[in-house]
Length: 552
View 1 (tube, rainbow, N blue to C red):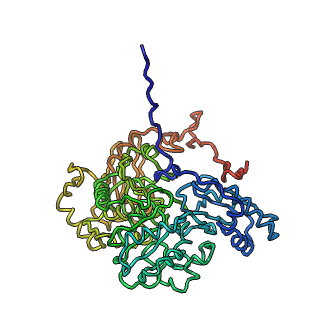
View 2 (tube, rainbow, N blue to C red; view 1 turned 90 degrees about the vertical axis):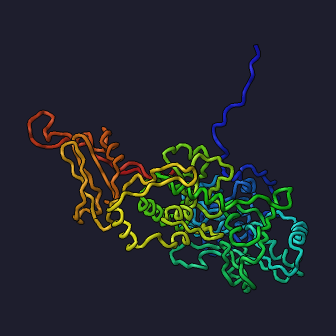
View 3 (cartoon, rainbow, N blue to C red; view 1 turned 180 degrees about the vertical axis):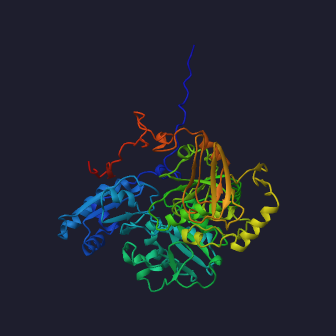
């Protein structure tokens, strides 16, 4: 009898949803090449000028083999400038979230004064840590780029705009010089948010070398609709231009760029034997995913970043939006989400991803995830009464999403509440499957003006009445009884399922063990004092690099 061996089951998916880890590792360059490629001389001058003492180097996964050489070369440059004393250089390991974002969490673990972000960067505004961006210089066959440019765009009078991923920004001007016959070709340069929307309380941001930036350019004076880019004054509208892109952006950024131009972008992949990158993401699929979110009853807010400046405001805005729609929500923070991680939350019907617009969003092109994933913009459309999705519109920036007009003003809400008093709510159907759904598990109070929902407990029955008592409208209202306990937050929603679940629970939090005390002492002396629990003490707190023990 022969035994046939079978392959072991797949227990987890790849750790990165864009297969970044599958890229081949690059060879470690020599020390002299590292010094010039990463502009270490300019970096040392910036460190000396700002008097940074603890420097954290952040590399993307593909450039981690360069980390030891870069750290050694930086130390040598510090020695040459006589500022090695009391200066510590750290190399951050695996990034907490997207590798294009500044990893402020890891930097705080080493108490870094500045983060030197190396490689591909999204240039999104950060919250705490000062940042120095080193784009480096990726390998690019410039002759092949010129050949592809002329093959794809034979008309020399065409309007073309050249955009590059940050490691290939150094080739943009060189490419334009070799295409002198294309008189209507424009280039772009990176621009930091601190220049477009200055904030005195924001940490400093610097790009090295400065010649690649908007701040030193005399021609690139117009902020582009392309995220974090500036270009010269357009000769016609941006839709009429042809996008020639050096480097392959992630699917979310690729889809966003495709909505800005009337023709498909030409994307060059330097890391592939193919001369031109292929594959696009359709907005029609995004519309289908958005309709799934419209029929969902429980929405999970997937936090995929903690470094972006507007992430907290966006999360609170989404929470309020979901509550107003009568749906439930959970907030879950997951670093580098994958199929296996999100499969643990079966109660969630759809996920809305709060992450970096370049690398933190997730587009499930292969249908691997068990539940749909949408962007904040798509969720805001899905929860509107009437969906109006403009042609070619797909917004990723947090500030633009939050500035979108709400579905109804106060007068329209009042009219909708009055109509709800006279008739039952209309049935809802899933536009994707056609099935009847109950997508609003939290029944909204009929009048938005009623400030409070009073919870009354009589014996073991739960009754809910609307009152005008505004003194406790902002408090957590709760009723205690022998058989049930009910709590409503925000005094706007009442959940019958929640009331049933609360009534079946035996343990209801700290102190609930003594909730049924008859106010008698242990020796039945009848002193009328409730039993006291153990005294709470401050324990250990802090982070892994240095815990602080509480007072004992």
